[in-house]
Structures are given as C-alpha cells and as structure tokens.
Image (tube, rainbow over all chains, first blue to last red; front, side, top):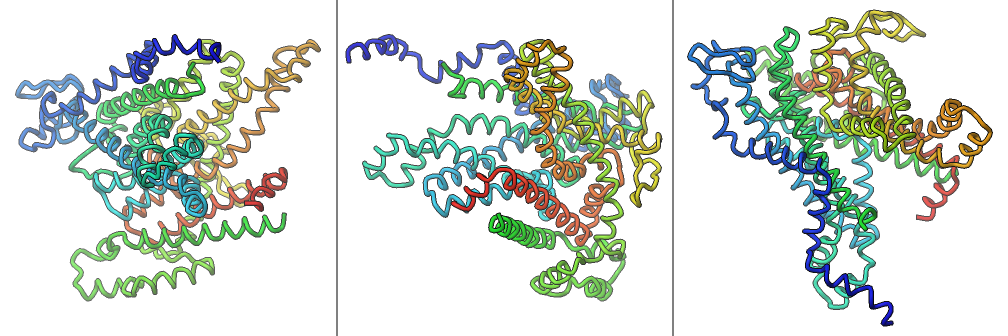
Length: 305
Length: 325
C-alpha cells in the first residue's frame, strides 16, 4: 500500500497549477495558437468597435454620396475622403461596410451557436439520462435531421419565415441543435455510469440538479470543441444563405450580403465589392477553425499525458 | 433478412411521409403568391379569382389532402408561374444538375485520392502538412466565395473560361449532356471544380487515413520484401484497399452534392434544378419548391436505404443487432 501511495506525492506539489492554467499553457505551446487567437481578437475587436473605428456610418444615407459610387480602392472622393477599399454602387465606403458586416456576421454566428448549443446539450443530456424510449425517440429525430444537408433545411425554413436576422438565427439553431445533442449524448453515456453519478443519486438530489450540475459539466469538453468549430460553420452558412437572397435583410447586410451585392459588378472587373468582404469572412472562419483545432488537441483526453 | 428488409422499407416510407408533411406545412406558410402573380392594378375580385384558380381559397387541410392524393398519383402540382406540371419543370433541369454532380464527383476523386495518398505516405513532411491544411480550408471556406474568386480569375481576368451558363448540349441515350463537346466542357469546368472542392477535402482525409493504415499491413510489407517497386506497391496494393471506404462515402455524399448544387448553380448561373429552386423561392412558386424538396427527400431516402440494405446483405451483424434492439 505504501509503495502505491508514494508516486502521488509529486502530484500534490503540482496541484498548485489549476487544470485551467495547465490547459492554457498547453494551448499556447504552439506558436500558431498565438497567431490565431490574436487574429480572432483583432476581428472581434473590429466588429465590436466598428461604430468608432469605421471611417463612416455606411447606413447613414446622409453620409453617402452617389457620386462616389464604385470607386476603386485607394480612390479619393471630390471632397477629399479616401476610400482605402473602394466603394459600392451607392458610394458606401467598403471598409466601413465590412466592419459593420463583420459585426452582423459574428453576432449571428455566436448567438445562434450559443442558443443551439444550449438547446442541443439540454436535450442530449436529458435523453441520455432518461434512456429508454425517450432516448431512442430523440436520437431518431437527430439521425433524421442529420441525414439531410443543413443548407437545404435552412433554405426551406427561411423560405417559410422570410428574411430577418432573428429568423436566420432561428433557422441556424434548428439546423445545428442535433450536432450538440449527439455530441453530449455520446459523452453522457460514458459519464452516467461513473461513481460520482451513483453518489449523487444516493444523496437523493433532485433530478434536475443531477443532470445539470453533475452530469452536464462533465460532458462539456467535447462540446466546447464542437461549438467553436460550429461558430465558423454558422458564419459560413449564414453568408451562403444571405448570398442566395434568403438570409439577412438588405438594411442590415452581413458579409455574405455584401458579397452578393458585389456579385453583379464582378463581371465588369469591379472586384473589390465582392473580394474584400470575402477576405474578411475567410479570415474570421480560418481564425475560429485554428482556435478550435488547438482546443481539440488540448481538451482531447486521449491525447493528454 | 426479409423482416429487416420490410422494416427498413417501412421506415423509409415513414420518413418520406413525415418530410412531405413538414415540407407542405412549411412552404404553404410562405407569403401570398397571388400578390406576385396578379397585375399590380388588380382589384379584390380579380385577386380572388386567381386564388380560386390556384386552389388557394380552400382551407389548409383540404389543400393538404388534395396534395397527398395527387402526390400518390405522381402529380406534385402545377407551377403557378409557368402553368406546367412542377415535376416536368424539374425533370427538364435535372440532367444538367446530375451532370454537374457527377463531373464534380469525378473531380473530387481525381484531386482527393492522389493528394490523400501522398499525405498518407509522408504524414509529417511539409507536403503532407500542407495538404492537410488545404483540406481544412476546403472544408471550412464558404464555397460560393471560392466560386466567385474562380470566376474573377479565370473568366474576368484571364478570360480562359466562360463565367457561367451551360454550354451546348448533345443527346446521349436520350439525355441532354454537355460534356461531350469542348465548349460544353469549358462551361462545366469551373462549377464542377467549385462543387468538387468540399468533397475533395473529404476524400483527402479518407485516403490519407486509409494509406497510413495500409502501409503498416503485412501485405504491403510482403510486397516490399518481394522487391516490388514503391510505385507498384502504392498504385496496386495500397490504392485498391483504400478505395472501399472512399467509394462508400462518395455514394452517400452524392445526394448532398445534388443539394449543394443549389449554391454552385446560383453562383455560375447554371440552369439546373437548384437554380430553379432559388428562382421559385423568389417567385413564391410553391408547387415547384415542394416538388423539388420531395424529389430530394426521395433521393436521400433511397440512397440511405440502398446503402443500409447492401451493408445488411454483406454483414449479418447489422441485421441481427437491429432485430435485437
């Protein structure tokens, strides 16, 4: 017994390092992690502070001059304003439009992911805890939904709802909850047989407390990874829907909507109206994916030492 | 096997019925098509006439009952806009979409397999890492924007390829296809490549994983011991064994390719059934939307059913566990 207990001593010394801090240390083990986090923070900052850093308010019609329409990047207007990324057909500064569009794209992506994650996780963990007929019914619904492509389901929903940021978010939640339900159920199936669950049941704690305070927190790591990557998916999906003309309304253009507006001018060589919003979109998606990839490496129990 | 077959087909029919109900209810909540079809100056009487002609004045359950009865006889309604059977409109556009999807499938294999095998042979090398990064990009970048950038590069700047539309078609066994002429092929190149990118990223991952596993197997070691050239080992022994999962997954993915063609066709103004769907959504042409969705649902259900049945036929464990559950 004493021999077996001995190796635990150094572990006690290490305990000063919290799991969170250890994970953070692992996360930044690679230099690419700094790059992706920095890029992501930069984009989020640009989106949050868009009204203060954008050269103009692209939705204030008083600030627009139709005479400045379709100017090439770097061009100067008659009253001396410089449009670094050019202007669109209404004389809107593309840099400002992109900053505001980024705001809408990130907002839709993050809100829909948080909502879908909450709904999906609650359903998934509940199904796994209940087991039996409830579980098989929920999982059938999940399978049925995941067997159809997300883009088609979202397209049908938005065709029915009409345009609007709130409607896009609802459609994205409906499309995405099933991923989370499946992910959570997978880990909950393992966790529900653990000793601490047995202990919680023996204490006769209320069921909701067992499910949400004991079971759910232990299913979180894989969920965080899925949710991070899904933010990127949600942003890309929203952009695609807006490009197809069923997403956000014309008055609140996201990056996808800006790309759609530029589509008509692409053939005449006015590349900047579509290209620059696309680059912003790609930067956001790549940064989120890189962070998600790194999180997967750090949070995967099979890879940790 | 028979019990499994009957049950699986029953499930498939149930899925189609459930989806038909959802699709019908969702689409029949969409706007009021009369507003779009009627002359802007039309008065209330004319509007009511149009609604009566289209059957829109009846209660929802009656419309649904009529829809089900007609659907069972293979009639999914007439287009409000073209006044032609919706299925006929879709059937006219279908060869274009199928051609696009198949050419894209071929592209994704031609791009994905060589890159995946290469990355699998040297997973830690520079090329292997770059290929994997490329595959992550292929997965995550918005496909429509890649299409736009390809148009910008090859059609607007270089002027090598047309920016959209479908080339001249020739008849092959009664189907109108365009890949037989050079001009038709030029029109197909960009859209098919764009549509193929996502699946190519998937094939790269499958081929890489398969190759990494295959090179450790005894038959590869034995082939090496026999003194076969590395080229022969890869082309014959490794390639043959990684094709099984690749073909399975691609078969399953054909349906999603047809669905995703909606986006590609819109970018390239390609006259397939996906473009028809988007146009119909814009024009509130409900019967066409419903007919398209029902067709896609049936395609998906049939593909899944066939794959499941083939698996059950090949692997008795599948049908036994299902029967036990």
